Length: 248
Image (cartoon, rainbow, N blue to C red; front, side, top):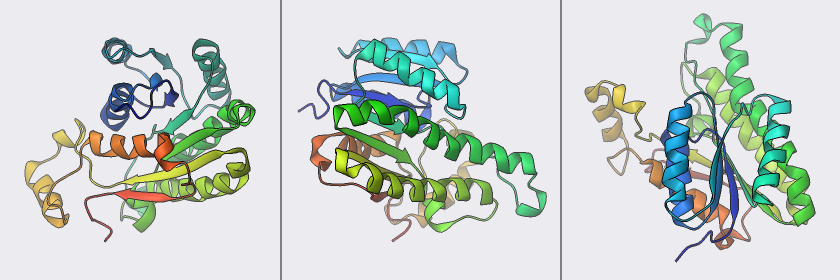
């Protein structure tokens, strides 16, 4: 059963990792996918082809969600190419970890700009289209770190916690127009980035998780399917921890 048949989705930061996993699962569920990438044209072209082979419309856009004008232009282009926007998945994000005493102002500002300001930019950009349609689902990718904090990640935690406050405010502002805003807070998700970490360290993390494993991009994507589909028609302003029980 295809839960997103005929819906048009924008997914930011989708050329690898969690974003790529969401794009693939969305296409399998029948969604047409517009996705953004920051640098890797090759990876974007490959993903575009892969999604199209699943029988949906798919197109990659080189765009920086942290830039207000670029976000506006992106949404304008997607509406022209796809006709409408039913789902926005704000997934683009970066880390610049360090203890506060060693964290530079630049490292703080950059993480807030990419992770939090991009949510403002993209939501503001799709708002007009969704208000006109009188429906839409916005899904913001936070983190367990945004819920519980983490030493050495004050900038990242602040950006991901800020995302939760922003999303809850949007749920209140946009709910009367049938636009829903929800948050997913992933725990330890195993991607090509975590594959570069020391295996002993990773094993230690897995042991500390009640389900005794790291999550996969598909685990996050399945939660995105729920929030993007009509299964969650009466759900807004919520934070779903997809973390194997880390925050239990």
